[in-house]
Length: 431
Ligand code: LLP
Image (cartoon, rainbow, N blue to C red; front, side, top):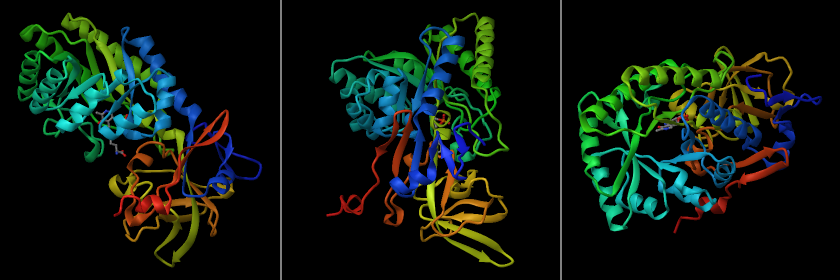
């Protein structure tokens, strides 16, 4: 199994976090997102422990809200003493309403509107991650207006192509994000922000991409960012307190992908940082990172009910399910790989090759091409694994399909974290 929270019971049913998925499907209906609360907490602690072990005091990981945002996740983050990042007023509002201490929150975005900036300041967001010259000016003005000094990081583009899918690679010089080191823009941004009386610059941020398994790209980013930190110290007499390395490590979606040893990878990054700082003669800054996927992805699973099995003789087979791109657009967008299992007969021989198709009126509504599973029958339960990240958070109401519920599985039992949308919900904003 690709993750240790997946097992099969005596009824030959797939189990997730020890819960029988067929029972869960009967109890809550499908499509259904399941989340393994213990797994989320485990990953948070893997990051926190590695940070404590390898990085200077004050270093801390942040959970990237964009991977999964709902009130319950922020309660878990608060409970675990985890920082968060947010990218919209919607995420700020959700976290705040869940009782999250917003001083531990980092606000990202390449185009924060005046409304966003005011909202974030009013709601006590700890740090802005500033992404443009306009934002420097707007945050300074707004903070002055409100009589505060706003803490901030500057988002820097180190200029690294990490070879992840182009749509999720964000460290290139020509990226829409950040201030590029290569063009001198980053130097200018530091000059501009240091002149601002109502912004306190706490350090620098970079993000090189997502779904990265190796430490090398992070080490390269650290190299460039630490060179930049040393250069800014020498030229502008400013010492960065925090270096934020952006998103976390990759996640195993299929058996051919590696299993990550987080402690080892973070240890490798830390060793490179220490050596580089030594060479440059600078203090090791506090390190931050913003993992999303590697906290929640394998803590999630989606259950569907099979509707039809269509065999197009000599061509291909389709298994149609009662969800699809509305609850998981990642194959349609990025051709993302996933592992699919027949939850109703988990250990039966997988001898039927089929494409798993969603129910939307669009041929691109595919969850996965050519997977091999036992041949399903109508009303059997199909499971797509590792869907905890960027599935619920990217779900839509296309075709006016209602979004599924999110059910948390914990040692205290199963409970609803997000209710299933109703037909009334779908029309609730229509006038
Ligand atoms: N920090 C920043 C600034 C980011 O842009 C991202 C992801 C993260 C942190 C979190 O990265 P993670 O640890 O989750 O890899 N919708 C795409 C993913 C887009 C990620 C964009 N940024 C997907 O479904 O794969």
